[in-house]
Length: 436
Image 1 (cartoon, rainbow, N blue to C red):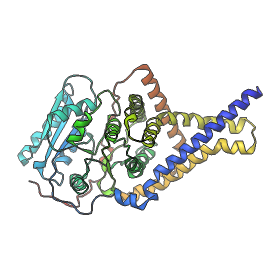
Image 2: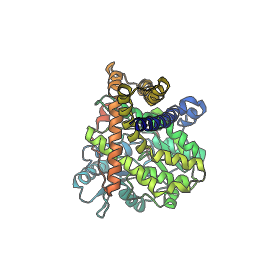
Image 3: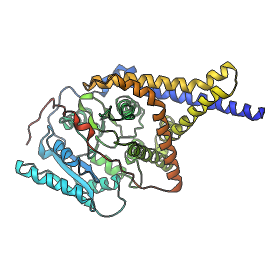
Image 4: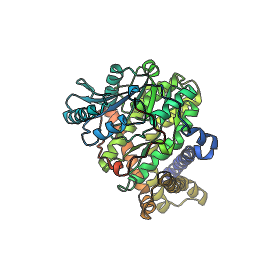
């Protein structure tokens, strides 16, 4: 019995050290742009815009989005950018008559205003998912720069001016701009979900771009059409087609420019229910595992890039282990007698978890200040009380994703959108361009 206990303690010590290193590394990534003024400065959008010359294909893949699609179309076509340089395609499967009907209704309402740049593209074949729709849209369009917005997105009116200027000034062919969840007080998990996006797009993605291994986001990403075509479009069997295409583009040694400026973020909402949140996280975790199995990352030029890819794509597994470890750590604190140094070492991941929580609370006030919001005094309290349950939910989603992948279940579990982020007014454009 003593031998088994010693083996258990030794294994726990090793796991504790590894998880502590991992947690410290994650903290470093969360603080990357804050720690480097030059990185923070580079992340900003241009102060002045160049004349509009780039043409944009805007793809809006949608399924059962009757409640939000019309407002999204309206915000895109009324952007501060010449109309003749935009083409907008709403992409639906033929059986989604509700979304198609709402999109057609909006298109008809825009025509008397002289706005005739939107069309609906449909497909009838399988698979029924976002990457399939994106490939349909890629083949049916022609403008120079291809971008994707989700059906509930609130884009900034000057986003095309930002990207046009960055591409022209810096000669880059892929730009990832910021995406930000906004409804941070909707439910018990929404604040932590919002802050994950905040740290990911404001800090961590800049580290990935510098390293040359960038798992792109699913929207507000802009590709030169030639790059997308060289990459072969999107993988229609991958549940995180965005991260997958980002890694393939990185393996082609195409640099990615990440722009995060609080003024120009695309606004989105957290999933409306815990069930939808778990489905979304399951899909992301499973997609990362699929991308890991594909081994496209093995084509990355350097060992450091490949190692970063493995770490990033395997992160769902780390989340599952961390959630389990916290439970074991708390239990052993009260049930097993160990030397003081061993006990401290076993508790290190818990201390790092508290550091993550503290950083999240600080991030809440950074986020709210950037967007002129005022959190309730209860918000940090709710964050503190729900921080561990939130980690357990993420761990559960990771375990669920692993089981689905092992069983070969690959269907797209859709997240519902209700427009919760649209309770706040749309930001006013800072540099209007005349519509042509």
